[in-house]
Length: 192
Image (cartoon, rainbow, N blue to C red; front, side):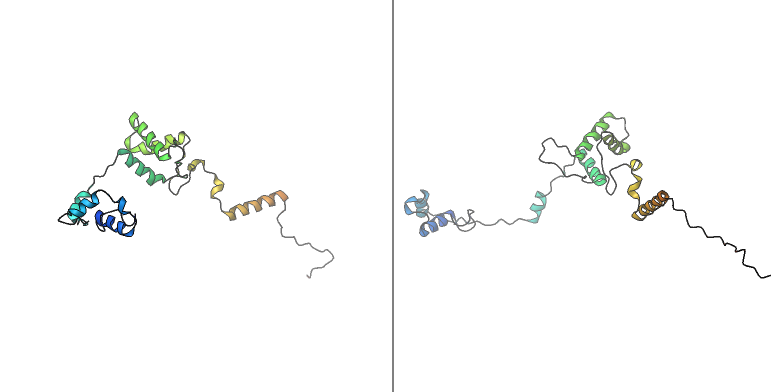
């Protein structure tokens, strides 16, 4: 069928009539209601008129209350501190639990115990996950805790090259050049 299926441009009757004129619908295949509508047309032509929305109605319809759960606040703080994490979500695995969701579950578990103060609960949850071998990377920080960090990671290239040069010099045992002492020639007489 050609044209729009919505009744924006003409009515169903005018579209069927035009299709019959064009030969798309044969005269024998016309709908049953076509002759009745042609014999008794409505007093007003049924046209599509776009409704005019008032600003008051739109504002009233758009006021949907925000739905926030307690977990949403924890997730927001988690993403603020730790970001999205080093890996993307694995949506193909049905049993995949994101680090954020693990954090929320552990937070709820520690909160239900009641042995941790509410202001320390966020940090204690991160420590509990670290004890379970779940590493969280703070934004702009490293995954490894600072006390376990390798000192070679912070060395500069120039420091490393200088240290290697010192090691090579120590291996070859090259003595440092000492100023030569003046030798006195006994044959040579000094003026008196």
